[in-house]
Structure formats: C-alpha cells, structure tokens
Length: 347
Image (cartoon, rainbow, N blue to C red):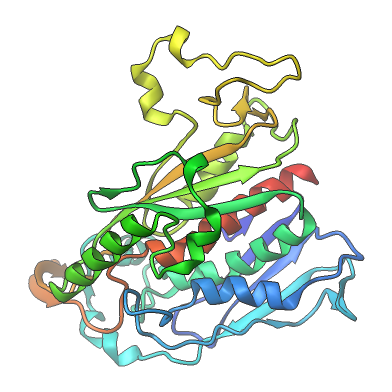
C-alpha cells in the first residue's frame, strides 16, 4: 500500500490498523533542539479519543502516546521521531458478522477488490483510528510555530448552522461543550439533535470551520502546490470528508467581481477577506478560513440490504461502538492537518 506519507520537508508517515497492536507514526524533517510540551501533545489526543462524551463512540481508549526515538531530554534531536499509541480496547468479535459482507458506503468493497484481502475488524487501515498519528504530528507542528493560531470548530450538524461569522465567535468556548461549537445556544441544539439521531440508530453529518490567524505572507508554492490546494488535499484525506471550500467558497460563484474583490489598505491588508487569506496560491497575511464537510457515519444501527463477497444479497445491521456524528472528534484532526500543511510550507 502506497500513500502513507504526508508532507515534503516535515514528513509524517503513519502505520497501524484499528484492531492491531498499535497505531503509530514516524516524523522526519523536524528541526533539532525544539523543547516539546508532552502534555500539550497528549491534550490534543484527548480531544480526539473515543468515549469522551455521550455523543461519541463509547470505545474506551486512553490513547497515550509513547515516543520511541528522535527526542532526548525533552528536545528534538533532528532524527526521525517514532511513536506509537497502543490499542487497548478492541472488540473484534463485533465485526465477525461482516467478515464476508461489504458494508454500504465503507471501504470494504474497494479494499477487497484492490488488495485481494481486507482486515474487516473495525475497517483495519481504513478506520478513522489512523488519524491518531495525524494528531500527534499536528501537535508537534503547532509547537514549531507558536505564533500561529489554529482554531477549528463545529459550524453545522445536519440542518443546524451557526448563523454568525467567525469574527463574532469566542473561540475560548469551543472546548466548553461536547459538540465543540463556540456558539452555546447552537451547541445545545446540535447536541440534542445528535442524541436524537443516536436513539434512532442513525447518524448525521455536518461541517467544521477552521480559522488560521497570524499566518505570515508568502506561504504556498505556485503553480501546483498552492497553499489552498495543499489544505484541500489535507482535509480531503480525512475519513468521511466530502467537501472543502476556503474564503468565499461556493458562495463566491454567485457574486460579481465588483462585490468579490478585496480592496487594499495602505499597509497591504485588505478591507474585506473573501479571498480567505490566500491569493495566487500564496498566503497574504490575512486570516485563512475554510470549511470542511463531513458525511454521516456509514455504520448505522438499522437493517440494510448489502452484498457479500460472492455477490449475494444479504441483510445486515451495524454492531459495536460507533459515532453517531464524527464532528466533535474531528475538530482536532482538522487542526492537525492544517498545522502539518503550514509547517511544511514554513520549513
């Protein structure tokens, strides 16, 4: 299997399966002499881990990271940073009923056809548990650029949207509720809706908005490695992501140039920021903001008709511990991937 490495200078390679011994990664290209805050790294993992609230999967994992190399006396040495996060709460029997069955909208069918073999326990390599390694890499990347602020939050669940611009939101409230939405009234509606969906044995999708502030001018490499193209690739590589837009996004397609152009101030900043902090594929110093669309989780606790590996129609129903909505746990993943893009461009 190819495609397990992200980045050009600051490179993260991930490995491991959902029900294997561990998830892990190797970071190459991290500068030496950087003092790492291990508690900050673990904090990011705690934001992603399962079992943290009533509206996420109840799989119980501590997700404690163990560093194997590349760090000495709390500082990076410049050599590859190896790490693992042990899997401690697998229940592989929950997946025995799909050993020969393809779950709708999962990677089961495509993995089997591509490789001729698949790990049906939790989806194996296609499981979102792989994103643990991304969060570790992103947490280290954040510490290499402390002046840049990266804040992601849940901006919609189903048809429930925050009806305020991000500038009117208090990012300090993101971690104050289980949904990770900085608008508390909207957060309550989202949480109630997710609980309702869970009772129905169903799932729901939504969007995460991410804001990058204090990004210096000049990041991004035209023509094929534009900054927004790299951010788009990073976000679309996350499990369950179906869409990415930055700046004015699809709304900008409805506007006239006279409405959309960001006029300059004398200091080079712009009066508006419909460009989303990126022009010509290069950061312009303004806030970079983008939105990521997540589909509903494919595993639902309702009966569905599918096929087995012989092409026979079968009735199946999801079992085990699954998220009714991935959004709350995906917030730190979005931030991590944004951090990996930025640090790679800065280096």
